[in-house]
Length: 259
Ligand SMILES: NC(=O)c1ccc[n+]([C@@H]2O[C@H](COP(=O)([O-])OP(=O)(O)OC[C@H]3O[C@@H](n4cnc5c(N)ncnc54)[C@H](O)[C@@H]3O)[C@@H](O)[C@H]2O)c1
Image (tube, rainbow, N blue to C red; front, side, top):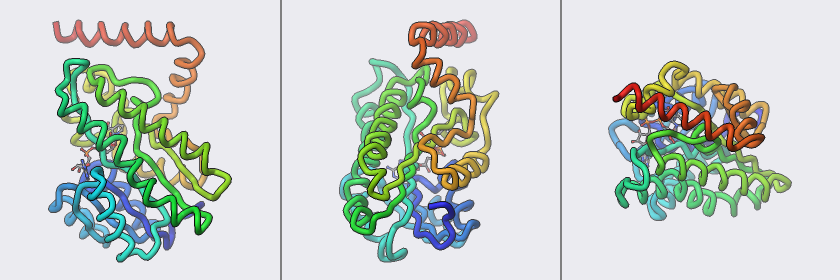
């Protein structure tokens, strides 16, 4: 897909932040968009702001994903592009609650698996389909202050890679949106590490949506609103110990700021 004009699109978690900007940008580009969010009022407001259709509900549970895709198909006909964007960021390390680990796993990973399970059959039959997973630079690198986020975003990236490697020759495009900081409620709620590390270079949700539209045109797997993330990712692969040393230096910097 080089252009989204006329395409049937679902954006999950589009009641705010990146998803809302994406829904607005894609409708402006001529797509027919379903705005999903677990927050019904937020989904309705964003849909009303851009002439999209609101379908509120949980985009992570097995039943929720099935319901969302079913209702979206009634509205759109075929789903040409599914943006698995909903995500949660929970703080903590190994000590984070079981509830937070589980929620992170359900929303950041299994939501993508469950959507792909239902979308792939029709997409493979048609010989085309497009999935954009909102991952994070944390899925390529790490996010100090949140082990559940880092681990589940790595898993989300891994699933997207696996899909792309397995189905590219059958007309399926899979891309991973991996921003660093984006000025949304999630960044506002980030702990000290998030604020210290991400705020300075944070981009607007609209800039992230611009990167997605450019990414759809160029078709590359990684969509990077912060291009410098590519260099960091390469550095991590080339010399893991040096990269870990740098991350630990940042951790000590965060701790010093809060001493
Ligand atoms: N803000 C950042 O700095 C940043 C950076 C990298 C990646 N991301 C990723 O971008 C995505 C969007 O985050 P955001 O920054 O716009 O945050 P946000 O909190 O503004 O938006 C997330 C939206 O997802 C919704 N949501 C949560 N669980 C849901 C579920 N089960 N079903 C449906 N909707 C659900 C929330 O109600 C919310 O409206 C997330 O996947 C996040 O991890 C954000």
